Image 1 (tube, rainbow, N blue to C red):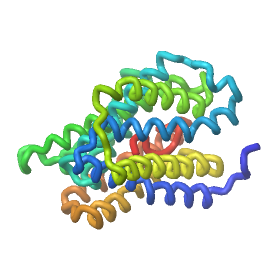
Image 2 (image 1 turned 120 degrees about the horizontal axis):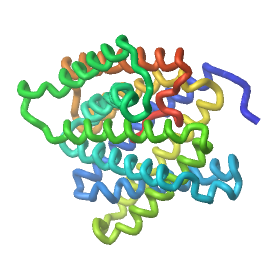
Image 3 (image 1 turned 90 degrees about the vertical axis):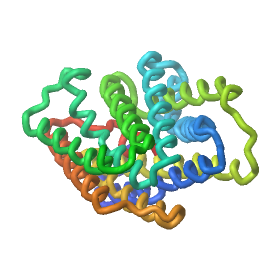
Length: 300
């Protein structure tokens, strides 16, 4: 039985999740500085994700959750999520946590821009204007030609693009299978593929590095558990704007652990992106569409 509606509790759980999720990025940045391959970090992320979603998927659909549902689309989702996570962690090699997340926030703008082509959805002139303004926000953050080129910006943008495509594929599956079951199956496919490929990228890690890998997975489990519970108490359309509070803790974490602090231009670009994303979220809510049918950030 679904718990009674409690929007304040739902908002509180999302805020708690957004407060801890940047811890994933802190672990990934530390591991990257120590030479641990990005693929090993992504492997840990998917393995723990599979373990976390298993009991929820079984509770929803019993043993049927273990049977492949839409294998092609779940494999595609897994590939896009792996690509998005790899690019995000690669971006952290040369960008601060806050700058990486700021560029990643282009995701809802890209979803709106790609929906007419990939989902045959109609996008009105006001939302196209919002998309254009959102891309201006990205340009303000990256400032091509005005600051030294940083390959991390390309990786962060690629991460946002892969995550946008992931959500579009997820929309295609909406109504065809339970979201938790498809999430579990995509995670298992990703974990299995990364495990089979492990001999190609695996390097020995120290005890401290193992602890960081485990902590990375544990934070992901805790954060996404809080998000899952939040959506038991409130609608996704109400909670979605609160996902952007993750930027606050990303700034704090980057400053505390690595001495990074975004400049005023980055804050300006982020403000524009968040304003555009919230506007799109409101428009989608009026049209009865949820931007992320599983709630919360896709990467992280």
